[in-house]
Image (cartoon, rainbow over all chains, first blue to last red; front, side, top):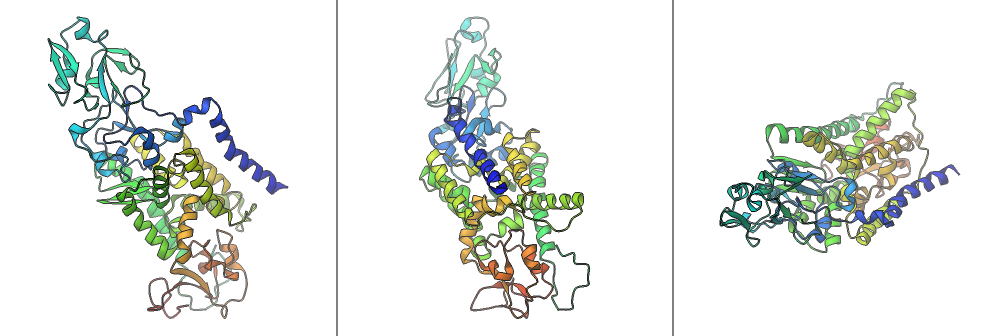
Length: 197
Length: 291
């Protein structure tokens, strides 16, 4: 009797999260955490495979000298424990230390220039240079692939999507804060459902 | 568990010290989890990184076998570094059995601490296991965990593993000053410890199940010498997993070679035994007392 009740309690505890996951609210259980300015570290495999490949060992977090990589928690469903970079807080400096320590290949070895964490996109309505507010070229100056990933077209910054690594240095440096976490230049993750302005 | 009031009989047992050594190693393994992030973070020394999901020592990246297996099954892709990283723990399990659980796992240490606190509070030495489930549940857990991971298309133990969570929470606390919500799982596991000793480890740890499965062919086993055994049943009460060494259950796959039964035996009837035909005097086999 007592045993049965304990077993039932255990059963409920095991099934309840699954039922909750079946609900509409639980769609978030599998939803990717990638959105604008929320990116995987360099060399990450396809987002569809990332949650399966990453073993959540956190070594990328420990090895990042800039502390830009953080771990997600259970609120992100099956993506709990996976690494994420919020570039507007601390961008990725492409030191590639995290890639070197990843034991599973979830972060695959990649050259700096071949990294594709996302693509920068300039909001031409809020960008100070494009809006004609100021002669700002902060993103151009800070870009590690200056003159290639961000070029100046008649003093206005333009992103070359084929070259941009998505490191987020430009986002971090951008002086224009549009809203919480968004700047005039933002990084869109590759093939993600991130909202763009 | 050694605390018999009467003086121990003068059988030349020589050692009652397995538990002591085990606790020392458990403590050292736990200290590593605490010291390592601190050293990483404050001193910038990163030679050793990670915890018991993936422990990087220099270029060697030891990977927990179940996490590696999950990743392999879910993605259906073989990552060579993962395979190499799994070799060390698998080799240990192959030779020594499920010793990670009893000698290294942080949950084991925390569970023993819970036992110490409980003993201090209740002032009772004997602990009764209130809820004992079928041992075979362990295998079911392993299968269910892998199946569920495959069905969901995402590995589960990688972010829900209690031993892994201990390491992750400590790291997150040191690095970011925060704790992750899923850490309550550790508390739940420790709370179950009050119901039954090692309740989680006995039946619900898929990693323990995998190590036990590999450890079925282990070399190191606790063996009972029937000639010495008087059938007092002390070992049966000492076993944290609820096995009965007096019935030779220490030879089954479930035994995790913690040595608690050996230490509890007043008659030197139980020994670690190294199964080999070539040399019986290898570590583990007691000198002068192989078999």
